[in-house]
Length: 268
Image 1 (cartoon, rainbow, N blue to C red):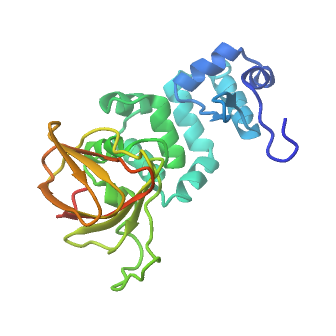
Image 2: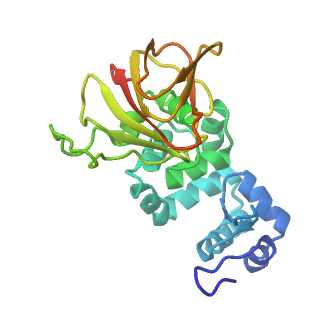
């Protein structure tokens, strides 16, 4: 235990406190019922809240006889902390969960339809984090919306002038990718400033309707179109392409890469 921070339990300790086996905890994690944290060395770490959740899962399973999907729905209905976590990230996770409920879909159904695991989708809905740009785009398309709308880009007041350094950011769903708004509100263009950490990538190719323009301010970006056209972009370089072409990207610089990225109409 760490006296200088929140209590964290190893798998065996959490299992003992919840009254189940360690293998059961791993099964519940694979089913998306609980998502423990990880230590710097990659070992599972369960918080006190995780242990309380484990006890609730056990109760629903033993006393109510619910299957994993039903347990998950029951936990979502009773857990205000899940809503709170999502709201800290502009509600992206909350919006995805609401769209899934409105469609009458389970986590397993949506995850299977989009080629991801139920635990990954559960983490995204609870924390607005944990997936790449391609997955986020695929989910937005699945629900008939856009990543910009999911990220809350069209909510709130719409300033005419956005001062340098005062950009509002999307929830950081993908590690190392920061998207800042250069223009807000329902416009004919999505105008963004991307800040990519070393190695940050789209994690797959995606496409949508419209046209795109990008201009590199610093660093080095690799963009791939249709899987076979490779472009290396350096500071001052620009690229314009049709959004319906499959595109993927990666920061090839050993430092940050910063670029302006504009989509029209706002279909991303």
